[in-house]
Image 1 (spheres, rainbow, N blue to C red):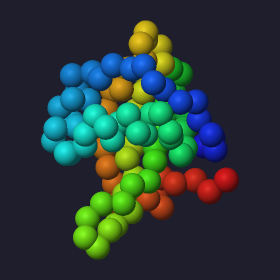
Image 2: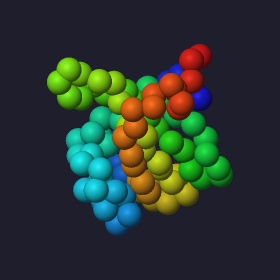
Image 3: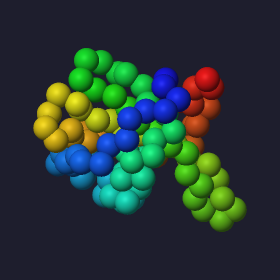
Image 4: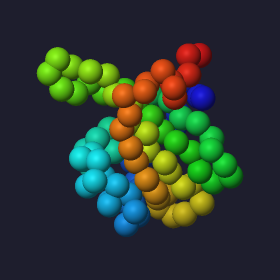
Length: 95
């Protein structure tokens, strides 16, 4: 995982990503926040990376990780899927 991944400001949401956002109650603002100021990124395969950032949600607040999968082999880059997980330790990489 890279400590300071490149910020993404221009992207498009695939139909699949839109369905997953609706199903998982993740807003486009959440996606934009992860892509413009990601805490970490990971190379998945040629042309695809996952960007991720931690968020607090709920009462009392609990830390979640939003993971955004991005295909870079398209113009503009495409968000292909997204999810939120409470299993931060599983995906978070200490530098």
